[in-house]
Image (tube, rainbow, N blue to C red):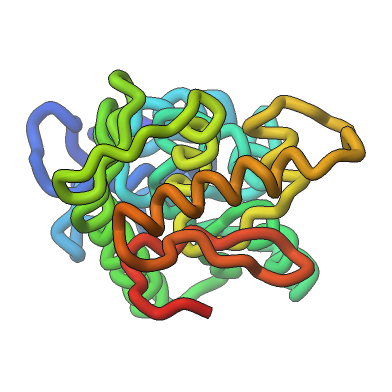
Length: 249
């Protein structure tokens, strides 16, 4: 981990209740420059300078936003995204920040699950604007070690329960795993292949409609409790979880 004392903008998580932004960047001057912009937003910066250190810190689940470099000692930041999403820090918004700025690089990062992609060199005001937008997005979703919440919806991870307002939504173990995965990818298209790999742990097509059947059951239960559709179908692609939207597509 980068020495926090080398960047005046950074602080120790235990001493500061402000929103935390994790910066995974191996170039110390760049990391400190990003930390200064984070401090200007009134947030706390936590710095890591290797692939493994970034994954370990992300897994604490303490951070609202993760700024992730691509070319890190120990691995490619793009490869870290799926591992972050699958862990306790999966609810954080991820900004990929990289010198690889071609359209194909940006598309790859976004398709792998980054919420935004900013190429180096960047203007400090643009970085601040991107971080503000991600912080606003993170504000619609709150996650602790036990709770993921969207408005009146609460998902309790330890108890494995789902409530919409005062309504308890009775879900099967597989349906609970599905809704947690959807919640950690709120607003994003989640493909059937992703669900097979990350919820069923199947790395091949079983040749059945098992995903559609389970998603259909979960969708009906949530819609009955909420009085509105929460899982939309992205035709030809997969599904989108929109817990705060009241407009069906």
